[in-house]
Amino acid sequence: MPHNIAVLGSTGSIGTQTLDVISQFPDRFKATVLAAGSNVDMLVAQAVKHRPALAVIADTSRYAELRDALAPLGIETAAGPEALADAMERPDFDTAVTATVGYSGLLPTVRAIRAGKQIALANKETLVVAGELITRLLADSLPAITAETDKHEGYHLHYAVKACANPKVLRQIQQAGFGADCVSGGEIKACLEAGFPAHEIVFAGVGKADWEIELGLAAGIQYFNVESIPELEVINEIAARMGKVADVSFRINPNVGAHTHANITTGLAENKFGIAMEDMERVVRLAQQMQNVRFVGLHFHIGSQILEMNDFEALSSRVNELQDRLEAAGITEVKNINVGGGLGIDYHNPDGNPVPDFHAYFETYANCLQLRPGQQLHFELGRAVVGQCGSLITRCLYVKKATAKQFVIVDAGMTDLIRPALYDAYHHIQNLSSTADEELYDIVGPICESSDVFAKDYRMPATKRGDLIALRSAGAYGEIMASRYNGRAVPVAFTTDALN
Ligand SMILES: Cc1ncc(COP(=O)(O)O)c(C=O)c1O
Image (cartoon, rainbow, N blue to C red; front, side, top):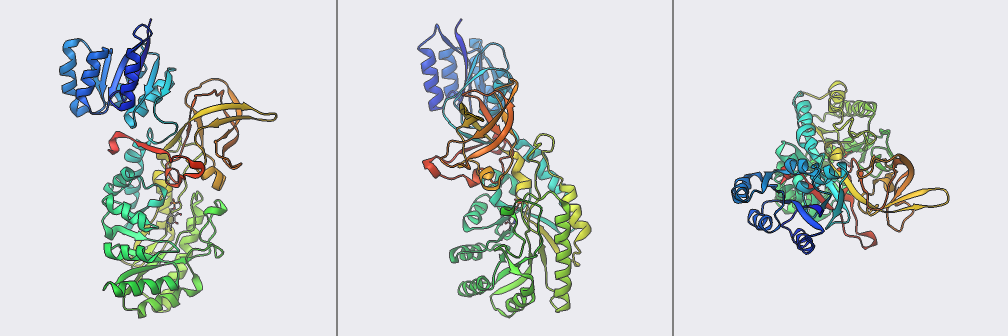
């Protein structure tokens, strides 16, 4: 009996080569399922040549052409990634060769693995996937946020682009009606390209370069979150040169601690961010005297991955106190309060809690922060929006048994997902290929750094070379923080077809 093979991505160059190899050994191999994205002509030609049991096209709009061409030959046809994923569970093939770059290949691959088939990844060593779970971003997270912000007059979300600037994700977030929070000229450009209107972009950062200020002014962004007096002076000068008036908000360091990792605490007096509280009235007065800046609000951000609502309560109390102080000083033109981002996600249980508790988060501010009449409240959530929407998919290269430990060495490293090395962060890790009894492993990458460790003493089904491993909750601060250290290629992100 020939070994039956599903070729996902059959019309791409690697898929074509795979089919050529298969056809050279007709007594040993047979292509059972062929699948392609949208190249219907080539898929028909391949189906005619290789006579698979099933030909699937991901692009459902082209299905009729495929069906009409192959029905007379008795070749079954189907359309869409779900149909392909269903095919993966059929008993009539043994191996799936994934030669595709796209979600249409990912979902069937995962289903094939779960159905116990062998998998050959024909083209990529490491896949960073905003894949299986991104439907949650589409279907759950964005509407869940809108449902909460809509309950409150004047609440607006500026998505913190630093969490994930994948263009498809940005487009989706923009279409959901959110603005953007940028921390560099590069992010502003990415947002403009993704369709964010400039007047919905805010711009923070302790060290804005002149060209970035010029870019913001030329584009007409909503406001600059200004972090020092020298920066205010430069913005005023550049705006004067360009014949513009820049709207500015002051980032005040509220000296409020957050219960999170020290490296992602930003609102303490010792941190480099923002302007000291005692200087607040002085900087506002200074701005009021300048010709080319207009004071429009206050900005805060106390840190990231915050799960205790008390921290946001503490920030709200501080904002109330500072607003009272400004009013006492006769300063009343505070149009916007921006409380930054920081809401955390459940890294330990991504399936149990895929959508953060947005209700509790926004209610905390509604209950604790006293907005003045007509005042707008701005939020800059990043991680909470996209964190659960991506996984890093990697492959086990070796299992090494050392004196005191067993190491699973995978082909992804801290260059693909730096959070564990940088913040000691936990990511839930799953072996997608094995359901064997659990063993204890240190799961490590191949980078020449001792900190290139994803997890220590981690229980996972017995793992062998070639197994596919998922590091969950990698949607935020994952792909975007990838580096080329050790001469590595940056990982490739795949998204659902729904985002194309
Ligand atoms: C100014 C500012 N706003 C928003 C964010 C987003 O934070 P998070 O992803 O935790 O929501 C950050 C993160 O560092 C930030 O520095």
